Amino acid sequence: MKFSCFACGQHIEIDDQASGMVVNCPTCNSQLTVPSGSSADQSRAGSSIGSSKPEKLQRMKMDGETLWLRGAKAQAAFELLFADLESDDPDIRTHAYRLLIDDVPDVLGKLIDVYRDSVHMDPKRSSIAGRVLGRKLAGEEQEPIFPDTSRLMYGLDVSFIACACAHCGVVNLGIPARPNGPMEAYFGQAESTGRYAVPVLCDRCSEWFYVVWEVRLPPGRDG
Image 1 (cartoon, rainbow, N blue to C red):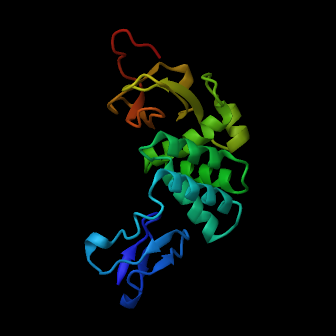
Image 2: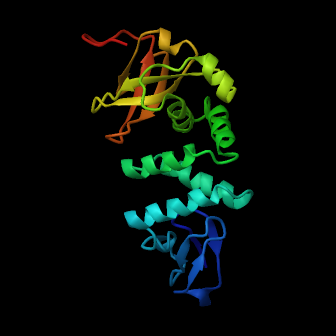
């Protein structure tokens, strides 16, 4: 039969006689219960194992430890934690962020590669990677980070800014922007209209909004 890991999505093929057994995912090592059949509605078997929040956080802790290894296991742990940065739960996102900004060898390079490789093809993915990089530099400060700093630290020609969420008003830090972004008027809005827009997943309300430039400012809004 075939089924998928609930944690990382790895497709697994196993003998039907293994139904009901607990096995480990070959990619992320999560514990999975083999389904009793091969129907599509069981394709995400094992979702009850490790799916509660405390167990999820424990799995993330293990992933953080695996980051220190090299090879396929470290890469799988990185991908899992990176996916957690898009969780609906702010606590999960915060925990993933803290694990990824730790001074683990190779992780910084992986984040830079994700940002650089997806900035034109997948803006949301590049934004998520860029925000980890930006917040690592900015800390809790709302002051912009200019390109000379990011070039020195990351080899990226990018600035990092802070902007209020268009939905809840909370200021989000470390948002990646074009090099001259801090020197031009910008603001957050729910839509991506504008000649240049950066998607941002809000730290508090978990809604996507957009930081936009080169559009007319709504009444009472400033950059």
